[in-house]
Length: 211
Image 1 (cartoon, rainbow, N blue to C red):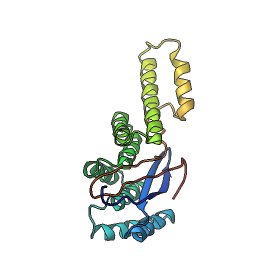
Image 2: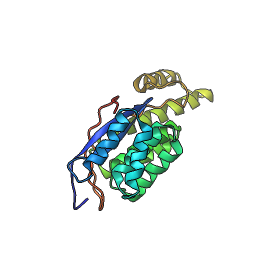
Image 3: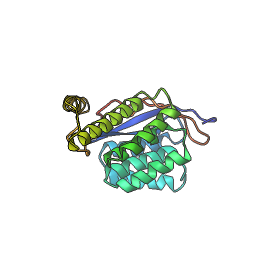
Image 4: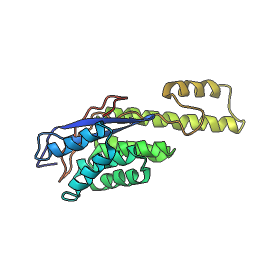
């Protein structure tokens, strides 16, 4: 964003093994609006947060932060398809922002679509090579893919003696269960980005925190 570069601060949310970042602008004309929605999320009032987000988006439908908040609310309330659509549209409209790619990867990994999750995280890193937690998340996705490959090798009866200890090591490292439903993707971290018409987000999201 060429014309406005306010600082962005995170609101955090962890869902099972996955964590979604929620960002809002501070120090701008709309800071109170973002703060209102984020406070409702922290209070667990998802219905109120969604109503407020929809109200504000009615006047600013392209607002990336409010759309981001809405996507997180959708995910937290079990509206996975809607959240997936929200984050996908954000990556299309604001491809310079890394957070939507990361959150999209979280949703894809939760659906066991690890190849697509990997691609989304690679895009997050491409937009911001210093996005440290996206690198970690990508490593976790690669570890999950490796575990699935080892499991398949065992199922086919063609695995060497070294496969079982390798699989055990990966499971211990990522905290995965035996089946493909277990994935470990952690919270997003530093994520500066820039695009015309949207503020440049910079946020640090600790693991395992809650709004």
